[in-house]
Length: 294
Image 1 (spheres, rainbow, N blue to C red):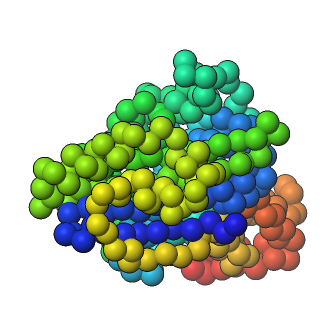
Image 2: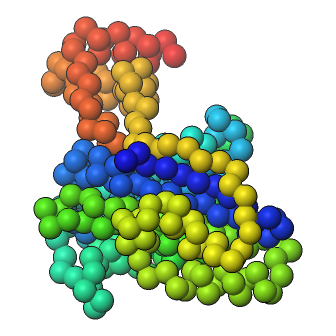
């Protein structure tokens, strides 16, 4: 089954919903980064949120970066997406191994920690990117993202993100939703939405049993809505040799000289997909010339 993202709006325009399945995306990330279960869950939640928040952008040239770092053992998690909803990401320490939390579930909050911030960086083609940042609520990621929308964008928001793993550590199901209340929503609609959201105990159980349409129907139960977009999403890295060459140039001529003299070559590895790029001495000397001559 392909991963799917759906964007819909209530017929009165007072509620907007983004929901998606990300089972294949999270499994691909798990394989790429060789993550332990709690790191798979944490990175998977961030990837799911990143995909939905990417589709909130206005232009194909825009991009969004999500970062969470609560000074827990997992370190920083970074996810990048765009209007397509395709997404990529990595976690600083993929080998965190924690016992279950008090509810008997993977302890994502314990792995992420709470002494830090959740940050959203939007590159909208302006001179400076937009940066929004809020203190971490509990490290479970969903509540932290909801807090960002409330305090940085003044939009009441409910977020549910889930990753369900098999005993082998592989991803059985993943996905979630972001639902937002617009300023003109009436109390009856808000009450309906709150009841619907509170009745959902596990997004991954719904996805496993009824797919993304089942999740959509549960969130919008008794609320008339129209689907405005439904599309496939995937894990996609945009790294290439030219980008990595620019990264080398950005090191500066002194550092490039040092690499040439001490190593004679350079191997760069993409954080997002682990693809390796080799630059031999001749290529490094050419890059050095570019750094010197601007």
